[in-house]
Amino acid sequence: MAINESKILLETRFQDSLGKDVFDVKIIDHISNIVLGECVEVDVRYPGENFRETYERENFPEEFYADLGFRGWDFVKKKIKERL
Image 1 (tube, rainbow, N blue to C red):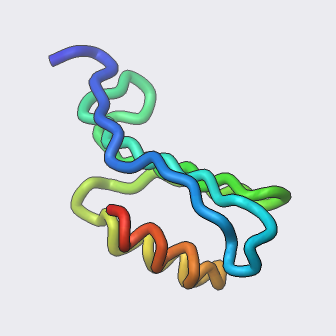
Image 2: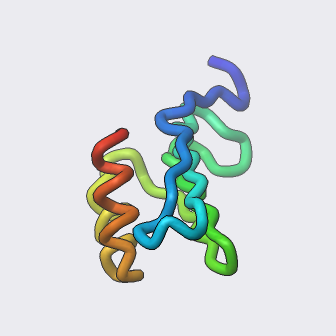
C-alpha cells in the first residue's frame, strides 16, 4: 500500500439555488494518508463560505449529510446526493 493512496469519489460543481454563484465540491477517500490516516475528506467551496471536514469511513456519508443540514445547506445536500 502506498503512503498517500487516495481515490476521488466526487468532483463536481453546480450553481446555487438562485443561479448566482457556484459550489465546488471535492470528496476524497484517503485509503492511506500519512497525515489524515484512513478517512473521507470533503471540501465544499462557495464564495464567502467554505466547508472542509474529514469523516471516518464508517460514518460517511451520514455525518456529512447531517453537517450540511445543520448549516442549512439542504440544496447542497440534495445536489451531492444526486451525484454521489
